[in-house]
Length: 397
Image 1: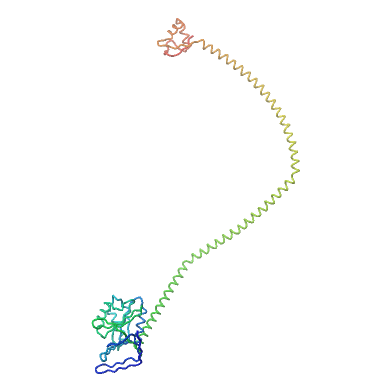
Image 2: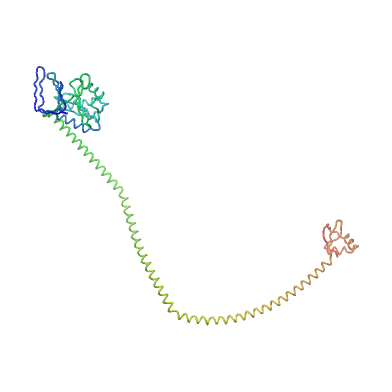
């Protein structure tokens, strides 16, 4: 990049060419030659650089205002002002100049730059190629046709910039341009107005931020008030827990003191017990003597009781002997009776009745006559006419 500063240069109109003045102080960027020369005023150039650097994440466009002149076949194009287009969607693949955008441009042109005309447009697209996209070229032809309209492109990330003009059927990149310095009251007033709007907007934003912050603070205060009951209850619970802990510590100390007192009393009791045993030893001796006398008495009474018991035993033995004799006598009597009954049983033999027997036939069979029929019936509690059965046993006289 080549920069050359010129102090002063004047041009006069010749023939039908209108009069224009070459700026006094200029700075050359790149190589400027041929039949086309571009000059951009420092206020406008600085303004475009600023809006480009402020939009590193999105594209932004602007309209360039100024004037175009011719002299001896050389084109002189002066960019004196620029109006940004913040509402325009800018990308390499999409560009659209709506009627609202043009109304905004005409309004600013009439208000701040009434003596200037549209000489071109500006694009700042982060990461864009300096080889222009077809969409950009077509947009230029649609809205900025003619060889006296230019396009100024900036790439804010790589800090590249270049002017383009449509010539020979294509967008041609210019090799260089001039930045000139002069009193530019229209652009100066426009920048002041823009700054004031920005400051006012910033103040409004600040006021809204303060208002929002105050709302948040008030909301937090209300929430804290609504939650006041909970901290109070929490504090009360903590105080109660501390009180219980303190009481517990006091009781623990008292318990430890009580335990130590019990241990001391136990030691004293043991000492007292030892002393009592030592002091009561003689007494135990006297008690022993008394116990011996009591034992003697008990032994004497025991002997008398033993003698009495022996007498009772002798009498009981005598009674037992007498009872034994009586029982023997009774046994002998019973034995005699049993022998007599056995003798009576043995006197009456038994007879098993056979088939066809009768009392009369049995008497005849046994005794040879009917004389024993009556005795047989009496002995067996039968009558002559009673039925008897085979296998039945009866006694015979």
